[in-house]
Length: 347
Image (cartoon, rainbow, N blue to C red; front, top):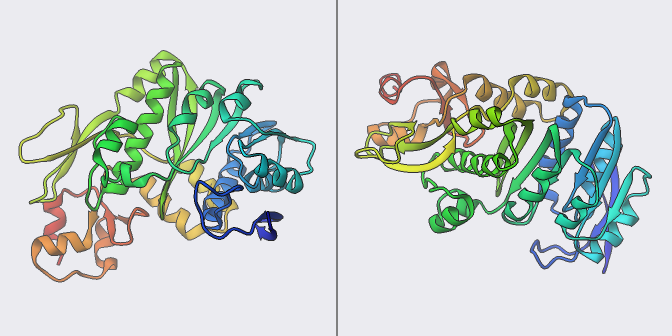
């Protein structure tokens, strides 16, 4: 296998010179995901936890672990695991730090051989489902679970039956699909956590390019889990009027129904503010902070509203008087106005 040396963040490391990304890659490294890892580092810095015990269970080239060791303080130990022998060879070439325990096992076996962790990262090629159970069992109280899903075609409604099988929910195929998809993913992870009396509350998330990423904080306790489950509802959308809302009912007249979804806030505003202070992606995080503070489900897409009203689309700056930009789409406005109020102020 031919290797090349590259730089990301504050580290240099070796990766396979293969160009085509696929499950068949001997050692997986996706340069597009460097943005995700940048935000990951910012979040861990913002948490400012002491004596972190970390598990990177699908490590690929080991770049995430290498960056955490270099850029995050107070790492006590990090489990760097991958099921590929070729990947582990590169990991050992890349990581020489004594705080790293490098293993070549399936993720479940690797986790079982260690005590609980303060932070566990699940970053698969595809669905995170096979790794949720073992990871949640090993997550400490107040610990952080990071979950990536790259099977967005299911979560965003291209494959409805796949979403029902994998995530126990019906997706929505329209302008809101990425937000509804991330809320479907959040609920699925929370249901797995509920089996172990662990309430998993989102503290940060983003939907970027071909993947979704959610960070959860764990709190033990049956009552905590009950409070999370109360926030699971169905999402209803009217194609003719663009009206939408969530409720416990699984059908509504003249509405398309998706879900169930998690209806709570997807971000901790306090955490996002701290991340802005330690990240180079300040503009993106400021947009997330605006979303976190307004805390509503869904948004209005400017082009869709213009099409519905059969009118031209105004400048976005005009509409920002009635809400904030959303990171889910460049043309989306999160607003506390009803759709009828938004339409009245559109032109």
